[in-house]
Image 1 (cartoon, rainbow, N blue to C red):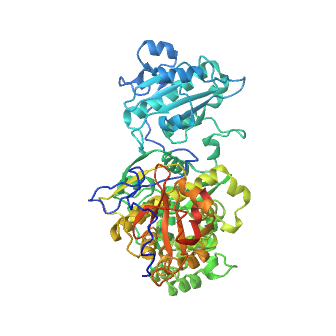
Image 2: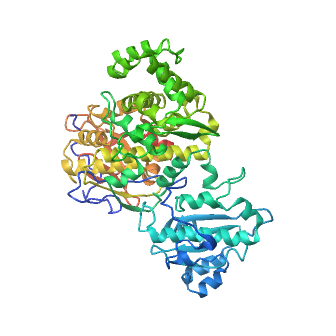
Image 3: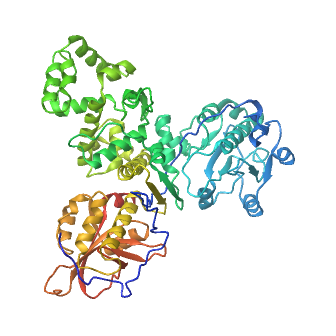
Amino acid sequence: MAQGDSNASDNTNSTPALDAGVVQQHQASARFSTELQMMPPVGNSVLAAGFPVGPAGDVAGDGSPASKLDKTKSVGQLMSAGVFQPVDARTAARAADAPAQPLKPGETPQVTVTYSDAAAAGGKAPDFIVKQDGTIQASGDPTAANKKDVVIQVERPPGSVANPDANQQKSIDGLVNYLYGRYSNDNPSVAQKGLQLNDQYGLISDNVSQQIAAKPTDSDVSTAAARQNFAPQTQAAMSQASRFTPGSSGSMSRGDIGNFVPERAMPRLKDETQTVADVKNAIAGEFRPDKATKENANAPYETSRMDRVGATEVPAVGRYGMTYPIIRGWFAGLEGADFDFDDESIVQHMDHLAKTGKVSKAFAAKFHNKEFAHRFVNAMHQMKAGQMLSKADMKDLMPAQLQEQIAADTVAKFMQATNNDVGKTALAFHLGKAPGELTAAELADKGNKEYQQSAVNFGQLAHARDTMGANGTYNYTVSEGGTLLDAKIKQAALHVANSIGGTDSQGRCAEGVQLAWAKAGFSELLGTGDGWQMHRHLDKDPRFVKVSAEEAYAAVRKGHVAIVTRHWTVDHNGQDSGHVETLMADNRGNIIGASDFHGKHNPNNARYNRDFFYLPKADVQSA
């Protein structure tokens, strides 16, 4: 391993400078534990478990506040009856000062359901607050005021990304149903069309949304409108990703991560990299295949349903929601661009794929049965024509190993074409086209942008799970601007720095940086030279972008990480090895350097005459 700067400390006091909010010591029993810092969310919903919705807002009939939400009674009457509680004085003052935009004839009111901490950050005054215990607080009567926009804030445990518990869920759904009933009494448009629901975090149960949600209009800019070109399962996944709001923090077990990204039963393929496996898991997390059961562990691979792709619905199959263009594209890439599914040639194609190890010999042998071969070809023609495959066809014709191979090869190809852009790779896979075929409009679409960010987050969650023990804990803190990748690198950089020198340099800065970034998935940095020589590799590495000092420091203060390589003014100890370190910021905005030790970074240190700065390409794209 290359040596580095033996006296490179930019912190004359050599004292730790990281706040508890930047790095913490976590449970010693956990094999893997880190903080995550994610981009501010773009979008919408994990659909909680439903419950029966009765007439007049009588949701449960169990004495809970939700069961007493009689739509024939006003907010004031229900408050007098103790069904609603008053909000605190500060919230009441905010609500009173907030201008209320009235509904115009023919307009449909919008109900926004948000977290209290997220709404506070956005300055929204709530009309209702649903407490963790299911208690409902009211600041006024939006239906009496004929308000166009109604805000329901949902209280949550600090940083929680889980679904509301049963009592709170009843109150959320009952309150939305009550508002629908109240508006319907005096507004034929609501009775006919429903309410516009802006449920960014998926806090309304699916069955309630389906009953009372109005179809988004062309002019609607709500979360629901942005996501209307995705299937309900994918909308639910995007909602989960958006629950990591700026400022939230918490812990996730392996099972918790499984609620975001389903566990993969099949082992990785022989040549499948960890990165490809992470992206495949992200795609599965967005598609949400059928869940494995004790009776059928293979259920995810037997998934067959219509998936919404853009403005159309197409059949999608298997764990990764593969559409016909993806399957056909894989065969064409291996067998020739003019490939087509036909009874005459499919046997030879499968035999060839078996010889190259792309399908099993046992599966290829089945195609020597003409009936089986015709059945496979016919299934592909069905998909091309927009028809779903049966569960039996999925079980017999699309084995898990074939699905894993198609997805792995396609993801690897797309990642290469996008310079390892996880979001663009996932979007291209979903849309069934090569990354180079994505249009400017598709890339700029708000829903597609959220889909890409969700895929990045899911891929990083999947990677975390693959590196943690069965009882490990994934601790996270969400701050503005940062990503899961940043948090992972910070954790690795500080861990390596502490294990080598703590706050004292050991002359092994390049070793420290290379080991830390390799732990975060950048193994190509291993063996790339000493503290100064590393810039030659970073200049050519497609995963990095060279930036100015100002750009690097600005990105770091927003929560990102950077690498700086520093050249000595004169030879140091007979060597011109320079210095390299990972840069990050603490909660006060101080910039920290970590390599074989950690301490404050001094940008004006006179012992260096040239600095080169690099940001991961993913951070440049999300900045």
